Structures are given as structure tokens and as C-alpha cells.
Length: 342
Image (tube, rainbow, N blue to C red; front, side):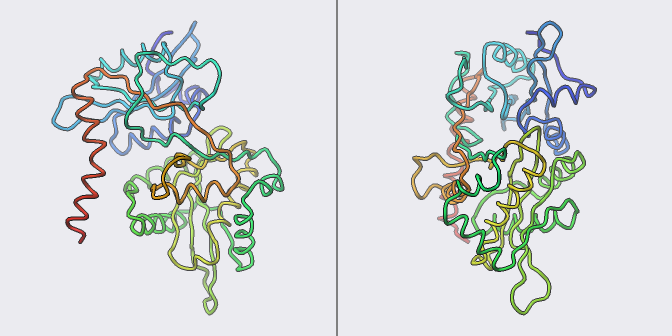
């Protein structure tokens, strides 16, 4: 196959060829707006575009090398391997990390031997996906009994969900998102990162927020208790980010948001609702992903396992040094907080 860089005029052709929102032209555009170096490529056979992907490039501190990152991309086969070797050498990469958007167990997947299983994935290996081609009663019947009950609790308390694309709604979402990050001691990118996603994807008709409101007794104005950013691409709705208030947990607003998001995806005639990651089924109970994984499993979604994350290494010394620091950094941050909790 012939490797060529994709031009701006090929935006529509490129988008038809990629399979995940993070590989979309629009997602790449917002990353570029934040200053990330990014290039789009195509593999051609007899003049026809067969495989498309973008790579982001990230400087390795104290070196002249870059890391290439191909998120939710194609099968790492021989053709992709040869293409990435050429790109990696041209861009002076120490290594390229690829996380294929390919489910485990699929037939005829042949991973090129030059790709090695990565010791440090970024995306989770597991995910929950809801089949939106089912009717509402089928989806409800597959939910955990308590999840269905909590939807009814929310409705009994008058919780309602608005699907919106105005900037006021985005500000509500942003406030709840960072409240949640602070409460759960979770790193959630920056406000500018979320704003760029919002502006670019909203303009393309690919983003909105779903906000759950509740009016407590004695108040006239409803309070926003929960907000999800929802994005769609091809036949799939995605839930990448969300936030909630610490108040009025008893009204189960999050369950209502999930149900309304499902119905919204069906209204758009989409086939899948991708819940954006889950913990390993064998992870310990204290795993940081266990809480949201338990919630997502309650929707009755199918547990999906993807093939491994791989690294294509050009400089082993720089790769292993960088990887060691990358793996150990969360532990270092945790230890510093123990020593200096304030």
C-alpha cells in the first residue's frame, strides 16, 4: 500500500474511513488548536483510500525525540507497521504507541511482529456498549433491577433531563465536571481542553450536553445535579465526560441522565452507545475505575474487550526510560500527597 499525507480537501473521505470519534477530523482539529502536533495519513491501494488515521506527536522531555500516538486506530498489521516505521523515522520518534479500535476475538486479525505489547496503555482495555437497535423495553429489561428502580425514583422526584447545545449548558457541565474531579481527586484535563472539544464538535453538530435538573422543596428554580457531554460519530453515541453535584444523591439523577441519553441516541437512529471505558473484570475492589464501572454495568450494556495496546519502538533506551517514569509518576504523586497532604 502507498502511504500519503491527507490534505484538508479530503476531510469527508478521511472521516468515512476512520471508525472512532477520537480519530475523526474534528477531534484532530481540536487537538491541533491546543497546540498538539498532529498529522493525518492514508494508505492507498490502486489509488483508493483503504486505511486512514491521524497521529499526534509529543515531545519527550530532555531529549530530541518525540512519542507518536495513534489512538483507536486500525489493525496493527504489516501494512500499518511499514507505514509507521517510515513516519516514525521521519518524525524522529523514539516509539509510536497504537491502541486499536478492534475487539478481541475478531477473526483474521494478524498483528505484525514488530509491534510489541505495551506495558502502559492509555485507553482502558474494557468498555461497555449498549445496543441501541433494541426497542426501549428490551433495553430496560436488560438493566439491573436496581438501575431501573433508580430511574423510577428520579422520575418520582421530578428529575428531568434537558439535551442542550447552548453555552450556558456547557458552563453548567464544566462546573459539575470539575466539582467531581475535585471531590474524587481525579485529573480531568483543563477547562480549555473541554472548551475546544465543545466548540469544534458542536459546530460540526457532533456534541451536546445532557443535564439533569431537580427542584428541591422550598425552591422555585431547578438545580442542575448531573451533566454529561455526549458526542456522536458515524453510528455511535459516546459518553466521554460527565460530572455531578454532591447534593441530593437520593434523587438518582445520574440514572435518569443515562436513560435519557439512551433514548436520545435512539432518536438519532444510532446503533451503539459507547460508555467510554471500564475496569478489568478481575480488578480489585479498590480499583479507581470500579465505581463508574459498576454504574455502567447496571445499564445492561455489553462488556467489550479490545485487543492489546502496542508499541513500535525505534530507540529502546529512551522508550524504557520514558515508560518507567510514566508508570511510576502516579505513584510519586500519591507519595508526595501522603508526605504533604495539605
